[in-house]
Image (cartoon, rainbow over all chains, first blue to last red; front, side, top):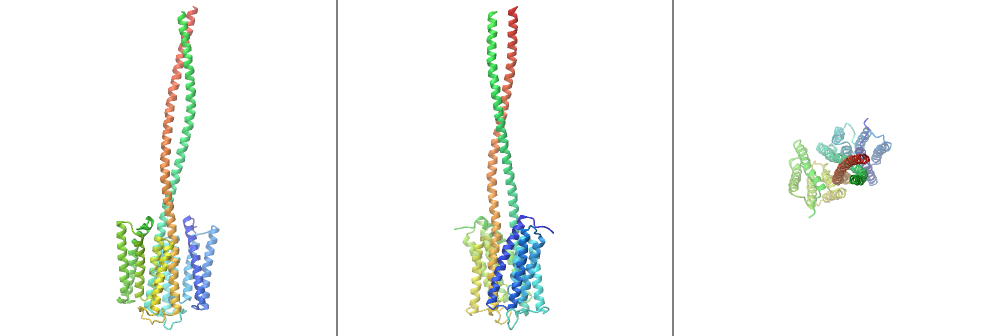
Length: 258
Length: 259
């Protein structure tokens, strides 16, 4: 298993968790509202709450993994896949193709694309689309029962035009989102790469500056040593000068006497 | 007139590059629906018109961005027109009846990406308000409803269905605005950091240049000092030799004197 080691991915997974908690809170509140307003049965509401609970458990698991530093790509992928499965399952119990909330999977695709890039986004988009497509076909062919959400006399989930239109719409939404977020994430990653490049350059320049400063300090120290040496030599030179004058005077004296 | 800043211009350019591709995909899928008989030509016509209008606006914006800086108001107008045209397309495609009601979310998406969360929320509010307004006008029969699946009006006016759908559209738009705004903020923070590093690098380069000049001068001075020392040492050596010679002379003279 590959650990999610880079800072960028951990940062992205944290954003995923923030968004996930935010979406879960909104879905939870909207469910309560729909439940209280009598827009769904107690059974449907219970299934929705169970779905929210499972999604929350996977979020807690991820939070725990990050804290314990045991996070691996695998756990993140499992969490995202469970999110999609939970969404589709809850939607199935809420009318399936009859439900207008099939877009919900787009948030998971969004986050998968954001955390793992283009390819993962497309894989999750394909996974979501295949599940939604399979659910629609099975509902249409009555391989699985349709748990009607609105109790309408004429079920539009039996209308092939409606199903084709809905599934095509979800195809566009899922893949366009995967593409767009993948693109934005790639841009952000390029920025991060450039950022690292600039940071390295800056560190190099600062190091260079420090080394040059050290050289200056060393040169200054050398200068002071040399200054002292020069002073000593100049003193010796002056002493020699004096001695020479005295000796010359002595020689003159000796010659004069002669 | 206030213009888009550099970062917004860069994002706007990206959006204008992506836009034709999104329109092309939408166009192909509508064509597919038309050819497979899911929708009639009259049914898809509003979709084609909406896509062409959005494409033309995109191309005009792209050209104007190539020539000069884009006005902020013009960028907002382009997004609002895009959202309105998509909403008009949705209205003629069955209003709340169409599963493509998510269409304007792409405008919210890009609005939030270019201008940030707050503007994204404003676009989400605009989109949702327009959608809600359209639905209410249809619901109270103030404007006609265009059915696309030849289903009776029973379900889109069903309280459960419309409340559920409207809540869904509300959620999709607002969550997308907040989520994309967050991604955009991360990208912006990285850009800011890059700009900060570039600034620091430039300052650091000029500092290093100054320090290098100083180091060169110091090295030159050390060299000069070395030369001076060498000169002095030579003088001392010569003088020592001279002193020795003079001392020898003195000795010689003294000896001569004695003899």
